[in-house]
Length: 392
Image 1: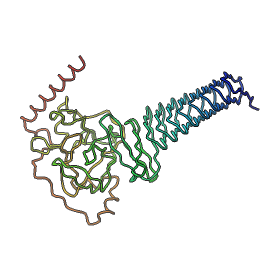
Image 2 (image 1 turned 180 degrees about the horizontal axis):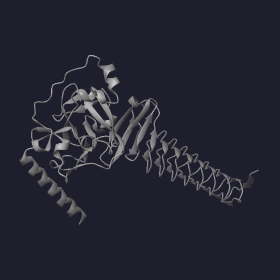
Image 3 (image 1 turned 30 degrees about the vertical axis):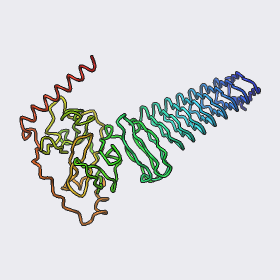
């Protein structure tokens, strides 16, 4: 049987035994420490401090602005009402913030975190965490591990916008509430499926409402062409790539560093497939043909399996990806290799022939004009000098 320990209406300091305890703080600003054993700590009213200690503990903050620390073990922690500070510690913890603007940090382990009501600040920490912000406008950072943020409702009830500061703004179009999610969160889970919101970490495409991660676009969404026209997305193709079996020259993405093509072009590092063409000096040039080993490189630090996303409009167009004019998808035999080819076939059984833009195309390095190569190397030197100056 657990040992019951009761506090008073005053400010108490209560320590557990080496066994399994139930500690009641009652009223007052109490400090409850479980010590060893699987303990149950109940703060009651007041601004309490609950320390679980070793083993699997259950902590209940009650009312008031409490501080709860699970310590070691697989703990269950409930903040209750008030603006609480909650720390999971080591172990696979279950944490519920309850009402109030809570600060929650999962710590080590695969944690399950629910912010509850209020504008919460949530950090998953290490491990593969599952995080639900709950009601309110929350700030969520995943930390190390493969983390998932859970949202109620279907994907089409939300607007996802990638911000320049390394976060996503995910807005519930029904309630108007916006959560801010860091790029180190790998997935967003909705009632009708999961969206991977991070590919290196995600190419930002310009839309009428701002910069949006390419992998969050859906058919019917509008994007802006390089000429400023809003065009509806016809289809988003997905292609899973394995680096284990694929030819590195064909599958590894190309990293075009910020400013490599001109001032602010790209605005951030742009990662695209080698055969994806961008418009440079009046020509569509495949990214792989631009590799120079300095400002434009083949990216080798990628997962063994990752996904490319392809945007198709009604016409072959140029969209602004990281402020860089990049071509939209043109149908060819490669569509058959896409993960969601059947989806396209169901939507458009008759297909459609799209005419390519009337620009010359360079598919290989030898086809890139020498003058452009010299220009890009000059840009690379300028970028390097700017970086050295900033570091100094």
